[in-house]
Amino acid sequence: MGDSVFMSSNRRYEITPQMEDYDKLEPNWTPLLMFFQKPNMEFKSVSTDKFGFRTTYKKNNFEKVKFENFKKKTNEAKGIILGGSTAFGVGSTHDKYTIPSLLNEFSDTVWFNFGGRAFSSTQEALLLLLNRPVELDHIVIFSGINNLTLSCLSNYNSSVYNSFYFQNKFDQSMFFDCNQIMGVKYSFLHFLKQINAKITNNRQKYIPKTKILDQEKYDNVLLAFKRDIDLLSLLSKDCNCKISFVFQPIATWIEKKLSKEEKELFEILDNHSAAHWKILSTYIKDKQQNYIEDVKNICESFNVPFIDLNSYKDFTREEWLFVDRAHLTDSGNKLVFKIILEELL
Image 1 (cartoon, one colour):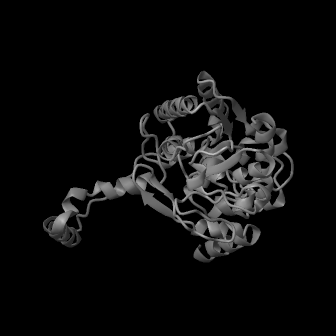
Image 2: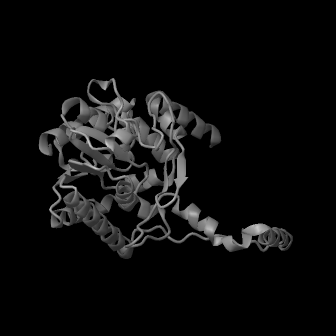
Image 3: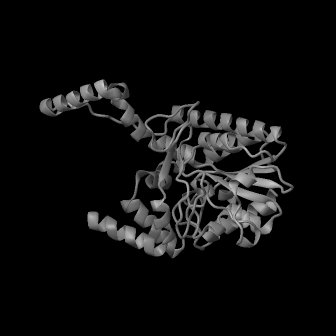
């Protein structure tokens, strides 16, 4: 099994060498957000600035957009792409081929990447609230799937706090009373407790709950999303900027003719990869129609224009657009940016 997984990983990197860079891009643990990208990371395919934001290039792909300058008052129109890892640009072969960089090449607005890997809509909203630019002309939320996926991966979710990646690991750490391991006295008591547990074979076990996306979980997803869109809508009104929601394309939610690369990559991920790929390929398939409609209705209730890329025929053709079921190739990013440019800007 181990050799098989290793060979599959190697084959995946042969088809998509850029994914090895993304796999090396570790999270940075932060207050409030839980985590963000590590700052000052530099790989061939992906890099981050000193704040952890992905590098974005200006027009002509020569100059980088500096976040500290982006936040200041200027004479330039400013826009952000807000979302999870697909907005971040996982799958692109270079920072120049992310959606914000592509938009900079073909629009007069200066765009910046506000993508956070594995972010829920609540983390997306918090990221913008914590880092709000002084001036902003357009917010494009390029997101949609993470709330559902994270709710399946997590033992529980909440209409207030939503779900987040690493939630089960966080719960497991907190399960063993953290108050008992703080300070010298309590550390010693904890040490004695661990010895006793080994001797008596009576160590506490962390037992995860079911991960089924039941009706209560689904309702919580929608309630948290509604609150997040409400916050972002209020923010857009306050800074007098446009706001739009673009539901990201999901390979299993599209009647797509898979390219040979997509077929092989999906098979590798299904056979040897983490649980979230299985969730994307099977568990949430039956939620597609209702979920997209519910997200659309919530957006429209706050007068936020909505586009569902899963309904676009451009994504059904037999072209290599996905590196996995959620993340896009350079060609996939180019399709997205063209639709945004033509329909929203």
